Amino acid sequence: MAETTFFPRRLILGAAVISGVLLALAVHMLGARYGLDLGGLWRFDTHEFMPTGAAIAWWLIATVGFSGGYFTASLMQSAVSGQIPQRMRQFLIAVGVLLLAGAGQVASAPSPIPTVSGVLAGLAALCLGAVMAFCGAHFALRRG
Image (spheres, rainbow, N blue to C red):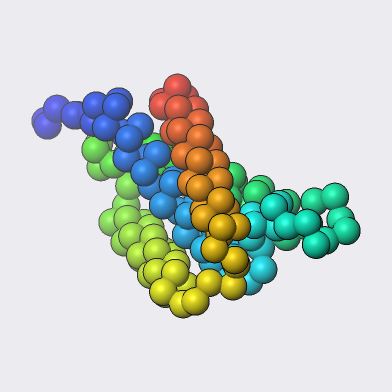
């Protein structure tokens, strides 16, 4: 009988954080194309306290970063022992590729957001995605 091997904890944590950050940035780019941008936080021409699109984008990026880190860490822990069915692996790979391809297509188009606001929104999405992906991966590793 084959002995079960495990990935090192730091490798799982690093891969889960990278995966969560990439998913959060992809959702940020896709959301910005549809009017859900964090750049609304730095606009002074609106009369609202915080634009609704910016609040929805903030929570969406945080949720995707956390869940991306959590599920990637959980899947990496169970993948080594062969507990993930082959069809599930193929489905997850296809979803990830399609999401990142859509984000790449959106990123290649002209940006609807002004440059400074877009850069600040991108950095905020990067930091938020990294923190939330780390938290998700950390909770998944503590659970397992």
